[in-house]
Picture 1 (cartoon, rainbow, N blue to C red):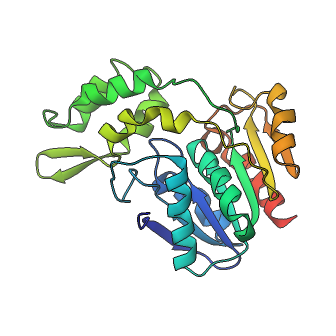
Picture 2 (cartoon, one colour; picture 1 turned 180 degrees about the horizontal axis):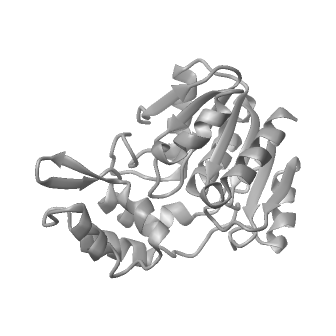
Length: 254
């Protein structure tokens, strides 16, 4: 286990938010301010991301244990959890092991099945940047765009780039380990029943949770419910922020 970096704001029942692959707690600051009107919000950086420790090991079992240690250190019970993409898988693994701590969970655009690796172009772009040789953020953007065409994805990835020292850029995430362990992020959730209340919130333009996936999820998670934001894709919290927050608050207060 590692001690995860987190930001804490607001008052009320605890709500922990976990980002996806290549993300960080910083991606959720705007939403956190709204959630903090009703909850004590913990914005968490998962291992090998953001300001949390870099380690050679990276898998969901460890990330679930990291989350448990944070919750234990803070003396929390009856926690609510929001996890996007990889963060959604983390909280599902967590619920299988530590369900007695869970009040409600929202899994944002992620299922329980295994997914084929599909980040090859992103990794190619990140390695193309070569932070040891890159002299500016503009140059990094140009190199990244050789492999990644989507402008919003480029800007999302570049949020992880910082000046480690004068003239020296670095990534917040642990790129070599994320690449070496990339198949770990795609793994299925173990076939263990989850008795927690779980909302699967889907992007209508995304293919991560298909209609045909619902029955298998319900067999494993009897109290699962499903909502869709029609106009949003995989980044539903960024693409439809108002609708996303409204769905979350309605569910958490129900």
